[in-house]
Amino acid sequence: MGNLIHKCKRFAAAFKFYVHINALLLVSGTCNHIFIMSMDVQCTLLIIDDEKDICVLLERLLEKSFAKVHSSHILSEGIEKAVSLHPTHILLDNNLPDGHGLQAIAVLRKLLPFVRIVMMSAVDIYREAIDAGADAFIVKPLNKQVVFRALGIQ
Image (cartoon, rainbow, N blue to C red; front, side):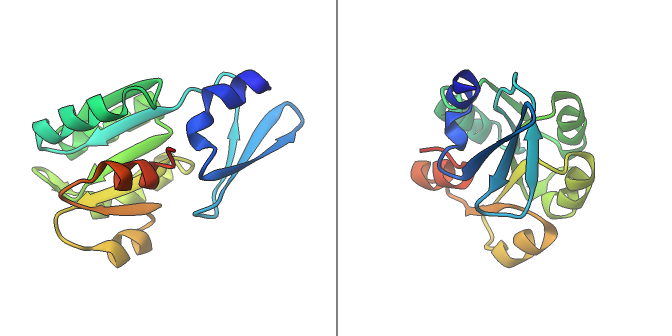
């Protein structure tokens, strides 16, 4: 059990831990989702943003906080990667070449109901993002502390 908590220490700030019948129930402090995770959980991040420089910057910034960090530059590929990778966290831009992240939140929620979705946009659409099902919202330009806080990283 201690090993799992050590692996997922980045959840510590945002989640309360409860143990029940060989499973770990994570109850989010920022949303009403209940997470049931197996003992071999590894925190994975998927970045969906068409700006390649932002993806590279975020990958380098967050590579030590996640077991794996992946990125996609178009929405359709991002959704495919989300289905195949089952990330624990998704950073999602709103304005993408093949669609809007705001509308993709509902799709991602149906496919991966327990993923933490953080919407990013240069336009302040906080209320719309939260109403659509995002767990957090970040206004661009990005700030390191704000990104860490939105992802639940200390």
